[in-house]
Image 1 (cartoon, rainbow, N blue to C red):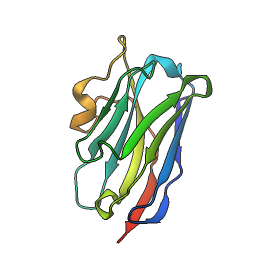
Image 2 (spheres, rainbow, N blue to C red):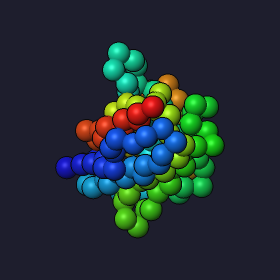
Image 3 (spheres, rainbow, N blue to C red):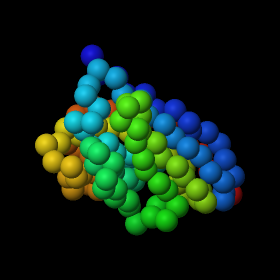
Image 4 (tube, rainbow, N blue to C red):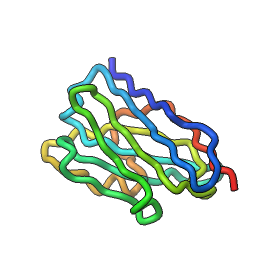
Length: 130
């Protein structure tokens, strides 16, 4: 049984930082590209970042480029998202998800909301106050 669990969300002031973690079990972690997604109330889910199976390729939405850093530790089956210089518009529920890939890159699905991703966590709330 596959489980994906996010943690690390919280309330932070604008300009602050948070580090999200996502632990996956029940799957071969390095067979999967991993993505971070977010959804704010009344808005569609959007892709934030994706990292390839090995961690050698990373992708970011323009809105977070230069502020967020995605990484993974395959030995620990864990995905991370370091978020710096947070803005009120970053407020959302953040989800991580797994996409089975044969090759070491992310498909374009991550930037379109991740509809093809197989496994999803329950999310962790990030709230940025102004």
